[in-house]
Image 1 (tube, rainbow, N blue to C red):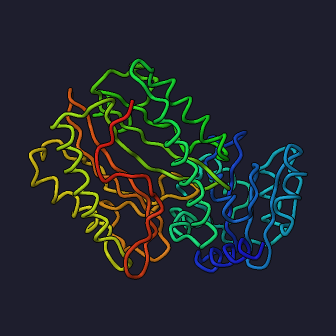
Image 2: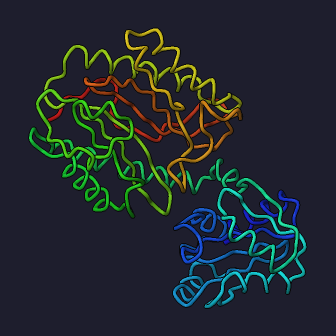
Image 3: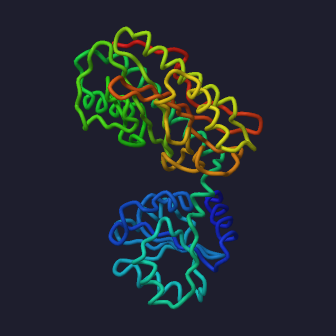
Length: 367
């Protein structure tokens, strides 16, 4: 409970306003638009609105969640808002004498902002997404949950590859993989996983339902997956061959492995994310496959969302201790297939601690 209170105190002291509003209600806003912010600041997993003032925090929710809110966030002032949420929020703003209200523009709609402006007449302070920025650095509890999620997903992968054989469908493999993760303790998968076989593996974010392809001997098989534990995500990728790999498949894999190691060698606090990105780029640009290099950032933060800050290769910021990031270079050759290796690591003062442990030292043959 104190952890959430400290987070709210840090937030309110940084925004230059009397209060901060978090709103996550699918009756009014897009579904789960700020579920992560609401959970991060309270531990509450339902819907509603959170008004954070300098000396108190009020959670507004309706009859669907009143009992749940009382159990999950007992330290908050709970306000029943059964009817018009925006009217309830406006009334609360006026009751507390709030003159300047901040909100995350990345998590709010124009409709809500204008409605509050019209009904309250107060100054609305636009902040991009300060809670998301806070979430970039994880505490030990958050890191442990990501570690557990990673372990579950790796254990499920080990079981899965023992079952894979020629003729299986990509969709069936994805379904089985998700089931294995849940059997081992995952709340859900982090995202709609990629199970891409043969030429489909050159599509970095391919989904099995797009092709429903059956595995053939000699295919590359790229699997991008993650589990959720305690609300926190894991995210990793491994690439295999179905049966014996060709010399070209192994060569492509070896170059991606070199790029992965090059990026990891740069990973530590005080380094620009761009440097970690560029290390992988430099390796592949000196390979025979430079025309098929990955174009997206080499990695990203992972936490309550599978894609969080920092975005290494896009953001100009410096890496900090406690950031949990992926490193995921790849080579994608249309008509042939693609290879990606993705690991998760915690940034430390003098380097990193790898959370992933599934073997990647060579192209593993399965089936």
